[in-house]
Length: 285
Image (tube, rainbow, N blue to C red; front, side):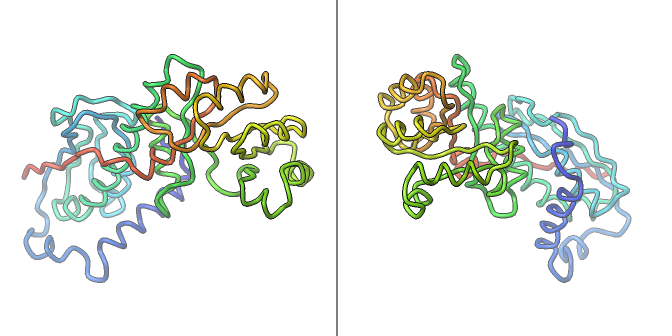
């Protein structure tokens, strides 16, 4: 994957904030005290468990923000599947103090993003025999949404909306306050621009009937069982696209995809992904 997915200003600001958080007021006092000025080193970033690599360019940004003279070489592309037998994914050479100072922030990003990409790839593999697509949600770490959604893409899935301003998604509380499904849909469609999609959440097939009468671009089937989802697809006959949400995990995803829904959204891709074990091994030049 290309990091052109990111606004470069966003990427730099995000990494700069992480470095600022780590360095505090006085910088890396341990490294400054123990490593002689001018000492050179080479460090290799290696994956220690099988998985999908993601975040290597973000790690590069961390090293370069500390010392632009560091030489960074990417050895694996984001989205690459690795066997995890200490698979090298990057090499950085230059000032040892700079390498050690940026190490933890660089690794935090790669471990976290690779973990998301790895878990996502497992979901994608389980539905590959269907036409359904896996997508993420807004259940992301505050401040890291774009990075985590990028990691989902590296794992082979799609992104749902990035924020509240991307698309209309009418949920149960909107319906309750607005006064009903038809009222909410009419208000949203009246306010929507011609490029903006309107999606609405339903909990029952009776609610779906109201949606089909009024019309929508997408319908989110919230916590329905497999039989209900299959019936919803049959009722629609292609008039609306379906997103299944709620209770989607590695055990349930295959059966849900086989109902004929178009999308399966899972917050677990970002809020419950374990990190992928990645380390940095330093060799003194």
